[in-house]
Image (cartoon, rainbow, N blue to C red; front, top):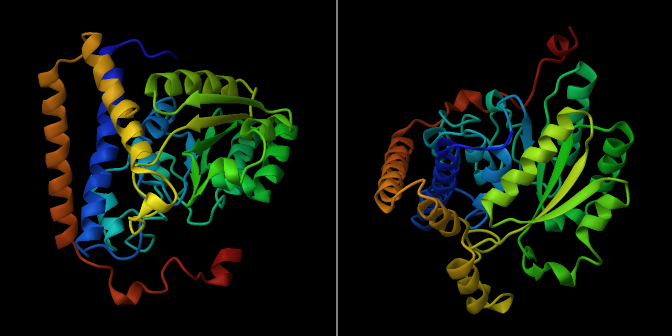
Amino acid sequence: MTKTNAEDYLRMYRQMVRIRTFEDNANQLYLSAKMPGLTHMYSGEEAVAVGICEALKITDKITSTHRGHGHCVAKGAEFKEMFCELLGKEEGYCRGKGGSMHIADQSNGNLGANAIVGGSMGIATGAAFSAKFLGSDDVTVCFFGDGATAQGLLYEVMNMAALWSLPVIYACENNGYSEYTKTEEIAAGSITARAEAFGIEAFQVDGQDVLAVNELAQQLVERCRKGEGPFFIELMTYRYHGHHVGDINREYYRSKEEERDWKDNRDPIIRFRTWLIGEGIASEQDIEAMNAEIKTDAVDAVEYALKADYPDGSEVDMHVFTDIKHALA
């Protein structure tokens, strides 16, 4: 249903700021050598995750990517458990064993992030098949980047989804670059045409406009519930950081002028903030108070995660192997 009240809009703004704030803190943890491994920042793409996830109910499913913090937070993840997971602590969503690229929370319908490019496409399509088979009206959203459109698995699952009219939305976050290469240098033709080849309705939307993303997502989610899926969305967006946190010398594949233009003129949070104030939904003071509250929550969560315990060494095989007799019982 269409969002009509101030509370909905303010929640969307809050979620976008929570994602940006989480990523700012995650980046600082990495730079200060307190976080193991690599991570991939979602900053700049907040309107995509929030615009889509706000159209979902808790039992609807999502699958995510290596750049998945934003999807997790937008689907209901909390700061403490998120930071604990990044730091390998037992109170993390996967008891610290998944890390930045493998966060899942089935209680919120988050079937998990996946470090394999395009790795969650089959999972998402399977979840949609399950919903239809069981007679549920649940919808699944499969998030992936533009680079993943080169994976053959996408075409196998889109073929199945189209044949069986599955309630799944394939959400392609086109941030303009596949790792370190411009999308147009490696992707021939139109991305949306790839879905249309299977008879799937495909749409392109400004991924920096949370209202436009949310309006389209609500329409497609409701159509999926009526059995009219699948659908494909190409969301035009931009990542502010490099491919990963260690990618700091980006001048060899994109210019500082380009980055500045996106940040100064197309930032999704600034655009939505300006709209909220212009519509009289919130004042400058309201916005600043919300931002300060979120910043404090993030700082507290980081401090909590830094002090939290690591999993006991006895858990090294837990959730890795299973008793085959038990599994077959």
